[in-house]
Length: 89
Image (cartoon, helix red, strand yellow):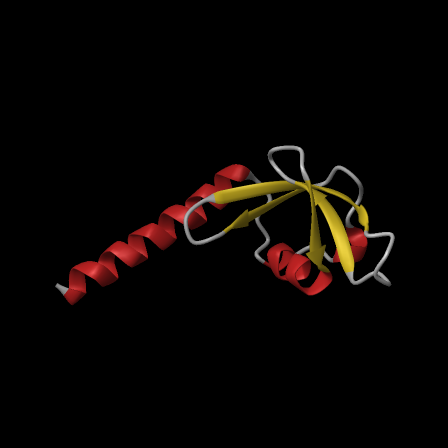
């Protein structure tokens, strides 16, 4: 079961996979301005980023708990893309 935004605590690690890499963040807090619609995460470079709550929940819904799990998901995406490309040849 995926974690809910309301369950996040400062310092919790959050893993995400985009189309080409694994990203990880540390949860910092609810953005002080924005009526709880935005949250502040700290990225891999220790830079704060503002994330809309629905996007953050979508990331949490992927339910990636470790970097290893995230890398496996990314590898599976690459394999599926490679398979599709081979079939198109």
